[in-house]
Image 1 (cartoon, one colour):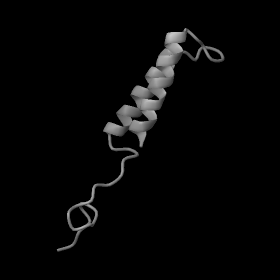
Image 2 (cartoon, rainbow, N blue to C red; image 1 turned 180 degrees about the vertical axis):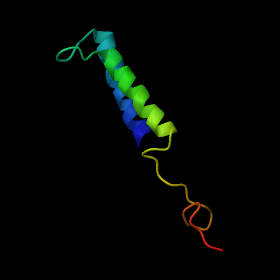
Image 3 (tube, one colour; image 1 turned 90 degrees about the horizontal axis):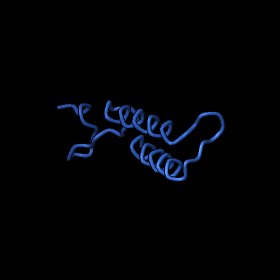
Image 4 (cartoon, rainbow, N blue to C red; image 1 turned 90 degrees about the vertical axis):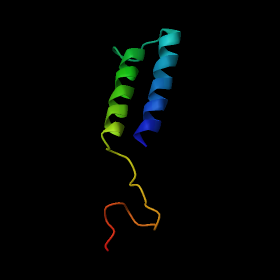
Length: 65
């Protein structure tokens, strides 16, 4: 989910950078790029990701034998 949000933020930042637009006091394309990188880092760290299901339909690591 965070990866999708990062892609949207990167897209907005790219458009702002192409149009050379600043929003409010200092929010530019670079700000959106840094926010997108932060969201990607959180995604890579496993925050905001869904659990992976195994072949039996249970959550990985939670199955009992």
